[in-house]
Image (cartoon, rainbow, N blue to C red; front, side, top):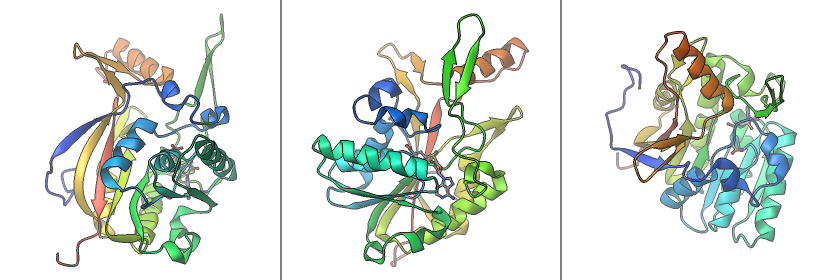
Length: 288
Ligand SMILES: C[S@@+](CC[C@H](N)C(=O)[O-])C[C@H]1O[C@@H](n2cnc3c(N)ncnc32)[C@H](O)[C@@H]1O
């Protein structure tokens, strides 16, 4: 958190999101084509937050839903999901994943809309306004995604599927200020959609840009305060398996590990980022 963030310190809890390898978490539950999305939420993390912060039958929204992890896990838990993504490619995959969940007996339903999350209130049908119990999302991380890594014997590695799209409206393709403005617009629109007491959960991690650590969680907390959302709680999702002997097996990408090794070999004592901040926000209650 940056020093001028106007929130008091709260209890901090840890969510073990990487006990199982990400590929195993998604195996059979998501279509194989889903793996082409560059930055998916871990299903274990979505399940944890959905279980804690929503009830069966409740409506859950992900305004930047990608391949629909929030919606699929919500459906398996008997919640009703609404998703939005700017890119028709990800919208199609999210719908396919919801069909798969329904074919596997998921009792919840889901709908996915193509649109710009900054105009959320116009995209979500009026019937749902004021009824959403949980908004669970993760913003795009600019150019910081690594996509799919393939080892080519004798000639190193190649990376594919590391871009969301080329669209200038995609918040991945803007600078930090543009991303924060976009998230502010999305959170402002979300106010009218949440039911009283509804929660906004944002999974967001710090990232390195040109060697410097960018405190995106801290910056988003400031944005949230500016648009009138209060910090309800804060947690950290552990993106590693925690073993019985206390050691951690990181679930990082090849390039994340490689960059750390190169920096250390050059004498820069960098550490791997192995967590995601979970910001739990809510609108002030009428009673204050
Ligand atoms: C980090 S990904 C979310 C991944 C998702 N949680 C999942 O598990 O698949 C962020 C998503 O935001 C979408 N996005 C970026 N700008 C957007 C905008 N202006 N409106 C709606 N979606 C947007 C991207 O296309 C991308 O799919």
